Structures are given as C-alpha cells and as structure tokens.
Amino acid sequence: MSIATIELQPRVKNVECTDGLLSVSIEDGRTILVPLDWYPRLLHAIETERNNWRILVDSNERDIIFWESVDEFIPIIALLAGVPSRESHSSFERWLQSRTKN
Image 1: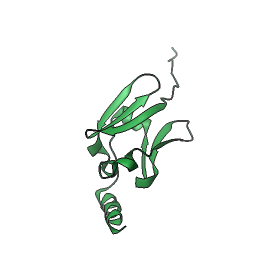
Image 2: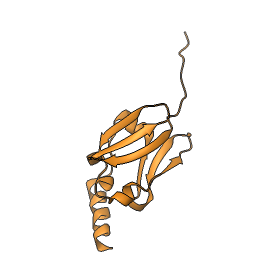
Image 3: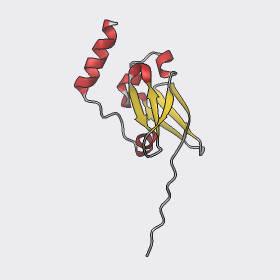
Image 4: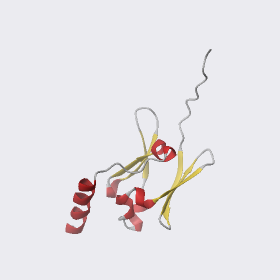
C-alpha cells in the first residue's frame, strides 16, 4: 500500500496585529488568528514595528515572518500547528531591558 503525501507550502499573503491578535492571511484563503500574548516581543512592539514585517524563506522553501526591529521570526508552519514562542523568559527579559536603555 502506498500513502499519498502532499508537499504544499503555505504562503503568507498579509500580516496584521490588531486588538491583541496576530492575524496572518495565507494565499490559499485561510486566515490564522493567534493571541499576541504568544509572541511577547510583538506584544511589546509599537505599531510601526509590528507593521514592518517581511517574508523570509527557509531552506525547505517554507515562509517565515520576520520583524527585524524586534528580532522576531515566526514560521508559518508554527502558526498552523498552534505553537507559541519558545523564547525563554530570561532571553525575553534581556531583550526588553535592552529596549528601555535605548
């Protein structure tokens, strides 16, 4: 017996942060909504930083949303799987302290 596999990579169409949610539209018509709390760097970013995103593509041709000003990377497959940020609390605290020094 053979098993059919589908090797489609979801492509990001648009990203918005509104009302405490991260909203990601995918080219196939789906929209993913997750709490902004899942990504503390985005939660603490100002609106202009949240709006300044771009798409990177990894070595497996998967889209990754990147916010350079807050150094946040979110793979689209992580959003689809419901995986929040895995950054440690101490790493986030160091990042937050570095922002208040500038």
